[in-house]
Image (cartoon, rainbow, N blue to C red; front, side, top):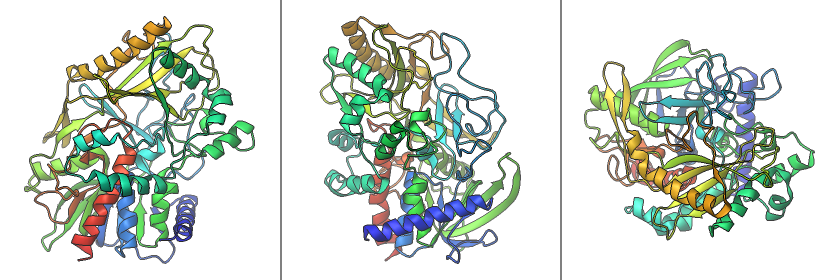
Length: 539
């Protein structure tokens, strides 16, 4: 397909998304398009979720002539609030920030041990969720675009040798020659210009961390991103509204970021064969007596009140509700007997991508800057050839004042895996994961940052995570697994024992990918849907 044709589709889709929001609608489609109306009972394909794997799937199905209905639990983030912005900022978050919480729950929760980071808010269908299990919390995006709305946008292709290790059944030659480049192109991945990075005040924090890493004999690398760096240059020049340079990221970016609603999802809606219904939660799935599947769906408002219950049937069902959502739907279906043939592997192989957050205190002569871009662009790459591999994002701390803090999100290699089970009493899944399973990750991060501290005569910050510990290992931004490719599914995401049922998201990755995972999720979804269309649908 030509770039001009794809660009036209994106413009049509973005217009439809904006028009739906302006009209206060929760359904998005092109005027007069083939679609599944709210009252209809059947649509050829249903895609659950609207994150990376789901967005790829909907677009490629439409290009193959298959109409699909996307069901998204979160809302359509297109309508400005009273302040003129769609999303709230990080420093003074409001109800738009969190998914039905009365108080924000940021990973960095204190400063000088003072409870000055989080805020009381009105419960609302906000953009970021924190799902709390006994000894692990998981952050997830809620809205049309899923995690693309709230992540830092770091678009990293994994080290090939590690990709081959974690997914040996996938042809790495194809992935690195075709599907990773395709994913990067479609997502709008770009890299910050070195001259801009070196001169702008907004990346002083990253340059300070680079200097400290270099003193310890460690290598740093620029990391591609989906944030538009040409837009960021204009932000810096003061010619456009600021977003990344206005402390916006984990609660959404109002400008500059190429989230999925501006790429894959816009192009999908622009085909005229994709309908998105927001604020629709799939509660359960079961087989249809005549073949295919039936979904029980709750439609609710932004206050959380259920306003309609629906049953929608389809021939093809694609689950893209994220590692947690997809796994829970399949576990519930298996354990309640709705889909008894779902593999016993569903619920297994879950991991945190080895996430550990830590922070260092810099010397007074090494200020990190009161102005910091919220978009990370640099990482310490200590993976290949290291006994305890770490890929450490140099993260911002955009507090609006000088902190002398260097903050990092370390991605480590941790073989420990969690298991999800279904709790009949609560109708929810539980996670078997203990803090002891984080020991490998913490030790790897400690070895790296001990080395940096020793070389620079610096120390850790002990006041940021609500305890006196310098490492936060009780949450993950990168939940992976639960329906692992080649175990719970075949090698193209087909759920074993369930014809025409597919997993298309981060649940397929076996707990670890060594870098930020969304480019891998996107590329794998491109690979899988191409085969599914050719063998299961077009045939």
